[in-house]
Image (cartoon, rainbow, N blue to C red; front, side, top):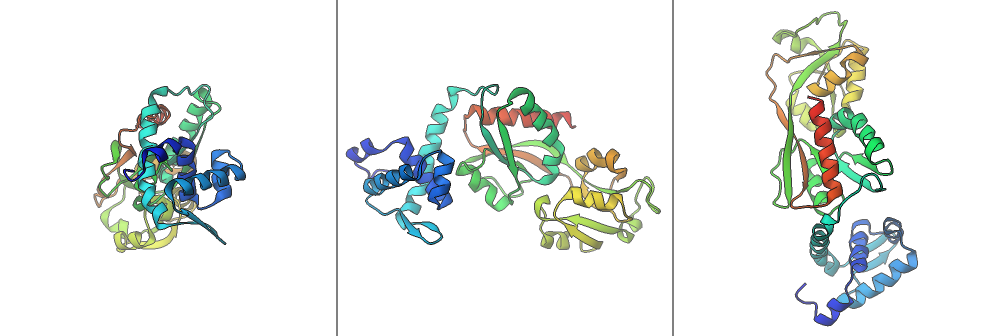
Length: 304
């Protein structure tokens, strides 16, 4: 920002930065107006001010929306850094869950949200009745970048790649894969032997389970693969009413064991455990995000 003179700094305000950031994210004027609760004319007015301030078109209208110029793309990280500094500075203003109508955004794999979803919904209903949470699945390759841009408040999952310096990662618990199949299975009762492991037909979960089809084929090629479905809950539902088995996170299988009449067994192959962690922006003092992280942590501990 050193190339902006004093006179231009006087013209800069938070609303301009918000409009710039949302236009860069959405590439859409209507979506930006909706996100910021502004009119289309207000977005146009702010865009005119931004163009004058930076002496650049910044966003060029195309049939598919706004296309950022090279200058806009260069400014993006600097504007984001300014917004993060402002958020950290104002973060101590506090958060009152009883009166907040905030929408929290976090990313997590399906096996985790299936475990804590009910507890988190009950926590919101009891302590933050006007607030809400939106959860979606994102692959590891993009989740840190979305945290940095402020498009996510938190991310929970298995992070096999090192976190960048702007992200702090807190381990929540260690998870272990198990073998799950119906309780009245005609062959398997109480334990699975090494030979039996390879005789079973398996349903695996990819996509929203954090495993891609390619990874499943690489990791589980010795097994008799019957099907690959998007989610673990779907896999568990299938094995509950068939002679197939699945290899899935133990916590999820144990949670579903009673309702689906499953037996949850230790794998004789010694599958390695993995860490499930919570990630957020480094140094973020947003009291609302801290409240959400505390709630998720407490619910997770109860599940142990």
